[in-house]
Length: 481
Ligand code: ADP
Ligand code: MG
Ligand code: ZN
Image 1 (tube, rainbow, N blue to C red):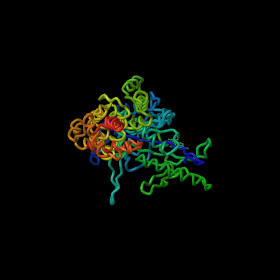
Image 2 (image 1 turned 45 degrees about the vertical axis):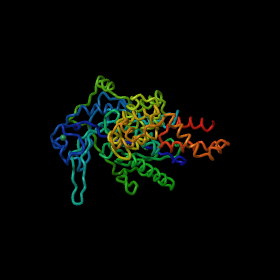
Image 3 (image 1 turned 90 degrees about the horizontal axis):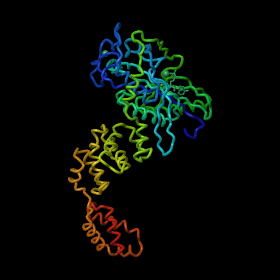
């Protein structure tokens, strides 16, 4: 896209579950994983005549999301009925917010990946609250409906059309997920429907001031699908315009198997949801005191933590961005440092390579995949004091991931302690120098390059455990004698 005559314009509508114990308007469990229709009652089944009662915790979490995204929190917002027919929506409407949402404006700041680069800000239009619908399950001979999800609280986060590429959409989603997890509003598990995204895409000639006609791709449930769908849709629209055609304003579905979008409905069949204020719920009033109390309880956010990692710990912008992509990862890093490590960047790279590898290889949560952060910290402390080499630490770490044993015990068990004893190292050097007389003569005659060979031989003689710094010093002294 970068060298193309066209520019992509993208706006995202993200739906995410709020991590409350109960549903938005009834006392049923909002948890995931129960058997079909175990978490239901007349309210969330949409029976006639039942009354919704708003879940205060859900409102607090939505306000946390709004504050984290720098939104304005509306002192008064209104729930509305969004009417449509679908088997997973028995009451015939979804309770959502329309004209007066809880949160307005705001922005998400994307991490800069290179030094001194200005972070990009993607503006938000609004964040509003709504209830989720049930879930249709299509079997070979029947269609079934599970209402466990019906009435689970959601926020919808609507961005302005500020995103300019598939990569940027991915970066936006990753930052948004990270923020929502930092504030404990959501666990952001996409595979459980915890974060779903509608993608709006148009293209225009570079330099044009008006936006082109957009299409909307509904219900993408992985970041990779979002990126692929955007790439496909941008290419499709450019092709239409290049061949003299016009993009139709349509809603599409993404086919993850064939990796194409296909039309679901055109503008002529656009939904008219007949929004009107929900008569069974009073306006949602949020006092300044409530907002202040929530503000006071907010944790450090990823953007602030990134800035602190760069400013106070000397990390690069990239390192800080990777660590703050995930709250647990950042916490792991900080706990490692708390063991008294001096070299912050070594610890950062340890988390980004060894710890992330353990997570990716096992596909398990950090707490299950990697040893305790304190043990990783102890391991790197042994490196800092010269007791073991960095390579030995990696060997120990791999063993610790499997055994669950501590750093000290593992290093002892595997015999990884480094030999720094000058006498032992000098003896190994003497042995190598005696055995390699011809090469020693060459080296002394000016072939400096051979030094590395001697280091290798001494290390081999010491079973790889010689302290490389001491080996280098003693070897140089003896060869140059
Ligand atoms: P609709 O009425 O079709 O739902 P909205 O104005 O509510 O459209 O916008 C929905 C989403 O589409 C928002 O995220 C917005 O940023 C994005 N959007 C609006 N216009 C465009 C455009 N021309 N190209 C790409 N995205 C757009
Ligand atoms: Mg819309
Ligand atoms: Zn219920």
